[in-house]
Image 1 (cartoon, rainbow over the protein chains, first blue to last red):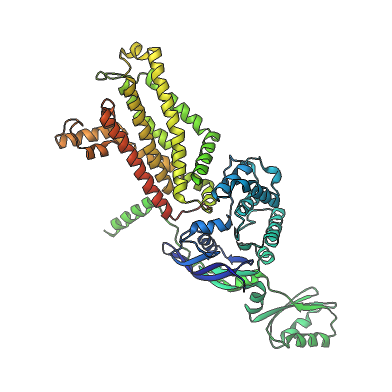
Image 2 (image 1 turned 30 degrees about the vertical axis):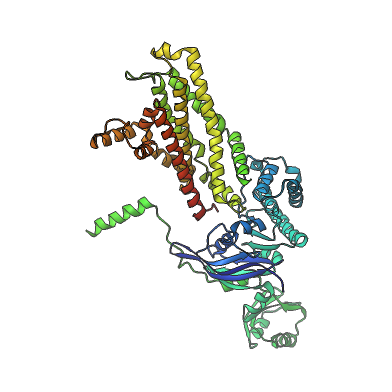
Length: 337
Length: 262
């Protein structure tokens, strides 16, 4: 049994009348890569910030590496690395000055500071920018410096909030490779939130799906694929496609929908062990030559959209200023009179 | 120590963003204004201490506000507060580090420039030449320096406190300006009216506790310039108020749910 790196129990957070996070409970094992998924406003970032100790939870507990985020915030922050959504730095400081400052905040012994800084810069590929002012950095470089500063504490748990947000495809690819390399070389537990689903698929072992402040699913991507639906998607490629076959396939019991695009047939059907045999029988009866036939895996996007409820009912009214509310309430009183 | 790291970074930032140079010029400009413009002593003045004090009673809160107006909110605006608070740095340490950086910026500048101004006025004979008045004794001048420095520090603490809640640096500055009322002639008028209402003449016979609280009024500060015991009490009161504001600020900051920039 692996050690638990992050233990979240019944975590809740209110923003005025809006419950941003509601009784969220999950655990992340040491060495695992955990992805937080959800639509905008689902509660991912709030959960993330509560786990790091930047926001105080209204109820519930978070233990990171065995330390309580509320009771022992300094110990938690000593053992984690955190990269914000938009990593920001002091623009008038050089890379080296920035990292030295962070080392001092982390209580890294003076004789170890340079080694840690060099190792982090080497890993993120900013070694030749040591004496460059951070103000001149591109977004991609800031993300890499964000990762470098997070590594200075030699973290057991690394929190990455949208690590590739705003990066160009090459920058995003480099960042992805960097995170994977980090996992491999340092064996850190990675918790990341992201909207880029292929990225989560490529990095994370386990994902938690958030919806309206609730954690609606938590499992490995494989398990989510196999259990999250009663239906299955099949794909078939034929040498001699024809439209008549669509009708015949639709007559097979269990087949819900068939779509043909050239030689490619996409079939949606209920889960049934015998279904593939029945479909193949129909195709062979129809003298069809099959190039390929198999399951089409549902993407993480399909799983996410299936699990979350898309509605705008609890989006709060825009908050008005004090002056506006006072004047409008006065006007209302006047109107009533 | 983490506080020294914060102070060092703040001082470095103040040098690189020219805040130090600007404050140096601001104080220098104030001294020039006091010595070489028509902001001279009134008919009741006994020395040039009065006009100097009246000018610096307004300038010093401004110096404090300017030095500290971006303390917390500036970091929020830049997004660096999230970076710093995700590290094992207690919030009170961050706040105190920022305060001490302002102290180290303001105090040497104010003290050095005002003492230099005294000697310049002595050497050049400007006070005799322009107003036919002598320069005050050096001890009284030092009292002036001490009081205006303490006023600056109180405003640094107040501005840091405001910057924790204000939505922008500009709003912080504007809100802090409101607290300048006691330094304004309006503050003096308020004291006069209260005195008339309670039939109190002068500050001499007031109990120590009352003197403690009225130390924030420039009218009382000006009165203490020539009375060493009251001047000491005034400086002490201002420093105690500064400490109280800092403690309240630290306590609130530790409990604040900071709205970080996305």
